[in-house]
Length: 308
Image (cartoon, rainbow, N blue to C red; front, side):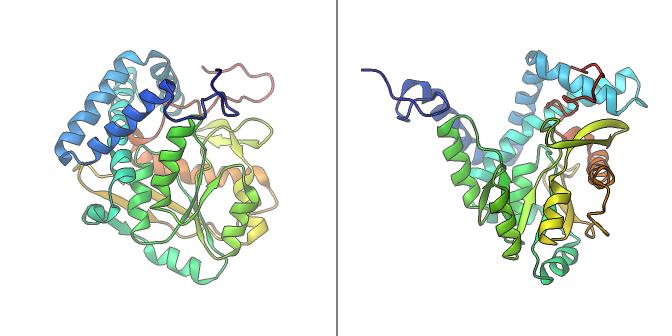
């Protein structure tokens, strides 16, 4: 009898052998979440170094991004940043496991939170708040720490693997009031109009149709129009949030800046450039913690050759 499959080609039954590696990965994340902190750091570094050595495609993408964005660094400095990026993202896997599989309350002593008054004033307006997050390796542990201080909804990209998607959404449901599919614009607007804070990350390349080209590290980058569109529809203040792992590797700093002023404007390219300028500023604090492994400059203006 032929196995019934879901729309994306995966078997419907999570007992199917195709899901066994996923079950193993989920089990490993649960175990990793309870490891001693120093062991997590060591294991994360080992994972990162293994990926740096063997994930040649991702290493090429990372090298290209860093060469483009940090031309002021010589080849040795760029190579060091590539290696540090893989290490930080390896540690990020263990941080994600901790955020998804344990009560975030046990992390409270690791959080240094600055600028909370900016979010409090924004929410007091009753129009919600659109939080600009960034795809750092600390994304999920940053979200877990943030949830200890502010109730938040979050925009997410569903995972192609249905089993891992269920695991991910259930884990994030413990942290966020509502998980909003990134394609569900109405749901996002509804949450903001209800006065909620919504965590939203506009720093990836979603293609030509959804974007304008705006400078990012001095390079024209396809940047989503949606940030300004959401702010215009809802009147919600746009709140820049920085978060990173501190040099002690044991604590995390989260910092709200004041909301973007006079945003949105009548110039969608200028609006996109302002969002990119904040993201670039956040990255420059700890560039190794950014997700340079993705093709940020995948979409190019007409007539320009690709970078990757």
